[in-house]
Length: 288
Image 1 (cartoon, one colour):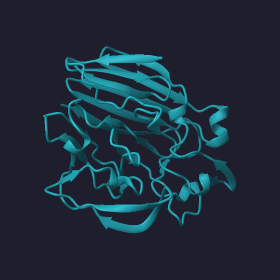
Image 2: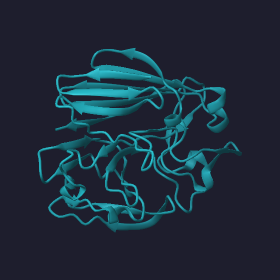
Image 3: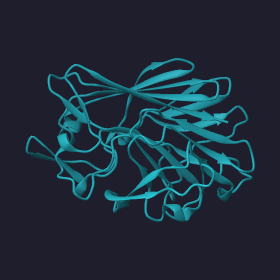
Image 4: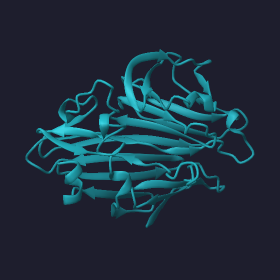
């Protein structure tokens, strides 16, 4: 099922399956979101929960018991319930079940609210712990954007604009973090897009380095700006060999490292949520 919300500038569609934004069009009908070509990448903007990234050997340990989870968790492949809808906002909800507790032994209520005003789409995440025990989790976003945005442009017409020139990138090895950090080479705060940038997987940034980033064109005024203050991790991903879309990904959580011990309570980036409390975070997308 799809739900639509609107502003004077944008029309947005969200699939209940995965609570995933599947379309953002401006009032001229220009589509900003990647349209999930199965031959390239069959998703639009998946939600990452209850983990972000890859687990070492695809499992974690909790109270001496082993649990297997796929990369980025299971929420992106589950049906959410639409619990509230207005013309310019809607809220989806996912609640723990016997099925989820086989993979993730915690109670949770996970709510995602989308709110649009003019040319801005806000995404709000709320994780509620209704139990009498601590909950451990990660959550993140993985929106994919058409690149180029306009049909008469080329991928090489696009660049990412950062807030400064100084960034340290964490290298990956088979989807896991390594101890190797390398500088990101920018030209006047700009990273011009080439498919070779992603030959060794995503670009990963730790330590809250990115609070705003923009996908820009050298040929037009088309632009997508993602604002995510206070998000500790960030990923930028373009499928290897692809020049059709790019993902800008704010995260509360990150993949395991090669030296991880698989213990969930000691996993880097994991959020510890006390009983009867909630976690809230949001990010914004501005479309021009």
